[in-house]
Image (cartoon, rainbow, N blue to C red; front, top):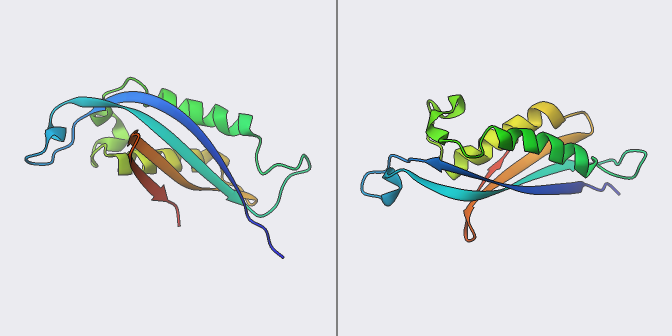
Amino acid sequence: MKHTYELKVRTRFAAAHRLTMVGHKCEKLHGHNWTIEVMLVGDTLDAGGVLVDFGIVKKHLARVMDGLDHKFLNELPFFTDRPPSSENIARYVAEQMAAVLDSDRVRVRSANAWESEDSCATYVRE
């Protein structure tokens, strides 16, 4: 029987953005305290019995958050040709984490970007 393991790490950052959506209040400069969740998946555990050490994932996620925290997201290179929506923030986080954590044993599967307690966007890597 094959087992798939999932590991999830959560963190937070605060930033400002503007979304160009005619007639919506999001057109004005505003900010959020985002909650970010990153999910990794894999089929085998390492010799220590873990998919990936939480500390390693948190270290890399902290670096990604440093690039977003207390920034005006519209000015960041990734958002030059795409709006800094929660959907695109989730994509940015997933891609940044995958660049350093994907291996033959572990893969970054998805990222969630919660812009409030009840509103979340998820980017799933296929």
